[in-house]
Image 1 (cartoon, rainbow, N blue to C red):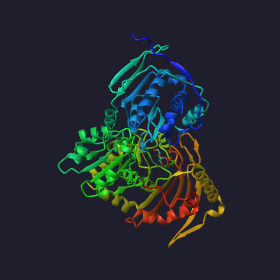
Image 2: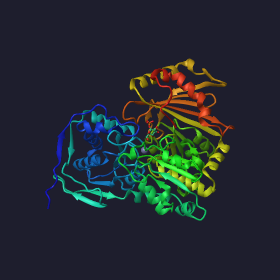
Image 3: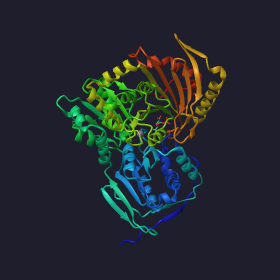
Image 4: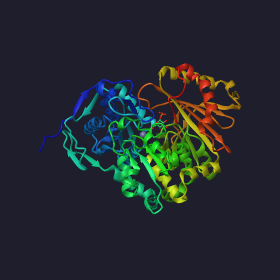
Length: 563
Ligand code: G1P
Ligand code: ZN
């Protein structure tokens, strides 16, 4: 028998900048590679944040989106989990697990949490981004109390524990056991097929027979799905092609790649170019793209008509009983992040279902779901999901839309038009200014906050051509969690006009370096529902730039990306 593996305690020095952002710690790959123990420090901080009694003998899930550095990081996570008293690790086959599948596996395996290795939609490779986050036992991103604890530990860390001799075979499904010195029981690692676990969950939510008929029956529709070389490819192939019968050419870019083929794995009209190109003529009735870790989605109709994520969640809400899961579980509440358009609010009002407006980031939804108060939620940033797990879920959103199409026997465009006719339309867009100097961005936000806090700002009027907007309310958004009463401050500057239009300013919390200023524009029209969103929102954009003096401050003359 091999001698037990050694557990080492290695001295280290802390870094001051390991504060998790909106969704974990994101840095350039070279930061993880070149700063001594940068990765180890953060992993140790995660484990140390869990009480020893809870950690000892516990189950932890590990997976990643397959980007460059994924394998290296997984090896270290496994070696450190063993040394930190974790009893059992559940790891995705080849180290891969989509973010929604990780959430699903954490919940199913009754793990104390999971470590997810991803920088989501950001480019990968040696010059790209890497990220790491901790999800709690409910399967969702850890809340602020936990991430703050991790951060505080990282600032004073002096040593980490590791089992450097532990070598794992990620290619073989099944259990592997390791004897560790000082350990009574062996440390076990299970390599699992997370695609099957996730597929099983979907089978219990949707009517697969009806979807199969829609996708491969006699009068089937034609769809095109783009996994953008992210982690979702195998899930798309297994569920959509093998099980629901879509022809294999309807799923593209389905081989996960370490650099996502050199592209941004970001499902929007700018970056999902393969999908957008193939949807242009009328060949496909439905299209969708996903991001690197498979939690985001973009839904397109024939000719590439975009369903904005804000509309998407509202349409799903209005048609929620097309999904069998909700026929059984009922609908407890709807929620959207604050910058997401108010389209969902109109459905909530009409259906008399509670609506929650939360800060940006998925973690806020989890608390409401755990308390049985929330069923369906969405963010404008191409995130939609429900309480079947605690992450946004790209493929779930696709199956939700297809369920609506199967029930209503209508095209995406007609479903959307009917929705606007019924509720009116919230025009929405987001302007992103990327790579702004951090001090300039912070100064702009501070000045803006002072400006809008001034009493004279309310009732002020702004005119652009023949449009006049009068300020009704302006504040820095603050959220009190209705379940545990924790207060989250400083969640975005809001200017709300008397006609309900809104301008919102936020700094991104997911950049790996520099600052990204986000400006969100939302305007409601009851009657004129078939206009071009950019045209409708142009006056608000002019006002937003003027008030903030963003162009003057940064020397830019327009946003880097408009979504
Ligand atoms: C962005 C999105 C936000 C999303 C987060 C994680 O965060 O805006 O809605 O939850 O990514 O996917 P931000 O960079 O704006 O902080
Ligand atoms: Zn993502």
